[in-house]
View 1 (cartoon, chains in turn brown, orange):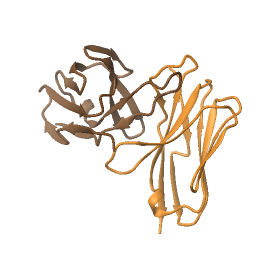
View 2: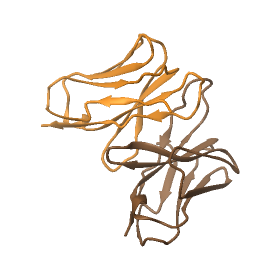
View 3: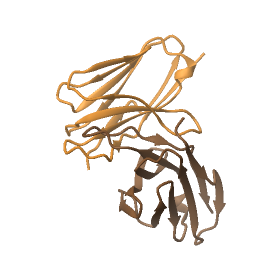
Length: 115
Length: 112
């Protein structure tokens, strides 16, 4: 299994509080991604990174920010959590494979509940 | 945004039955992937198909990429309870983007 960990694995927080989720990899892969998964919506990309300090927005980036100061760590911050951000969050990593879409390796997920 | 439509959304069958799930789009994809996600875990890649008309087999699973590279199917022969999970298709655009687009998935339950 690819070395990807997410922390915390479960979190309950209150509306309006900031929350930071951490993704850590030991594979030295260049690309890292944050997704959220909700019933009926599948996996939706929040933000991704293509290198240290290089990040870009995905399709559902509003209310989220990210940072990547080291190759191995990718942080997702909910600036002021809302109930609509209750979800399961997955981190993924990949390397480029030429022109093919790369294989993504996913972490175990973080279940976040915003009350 | 290129959309991938998966059908059926839910499937509940008995052990030993065969099934097919579909992934369709109006857009052309340079390559397409199938992932399986077991409850409480992240998705795991099953296969990547690249060439129009390509067929790949993985034990009891058969994957096909449409000739026009706009659709794909996954056929499972003699399903087993261990096949239970969420099957997701993901595609890369014709421009060769490394950011895949995921379908919403087919949730399969195989009863013993």
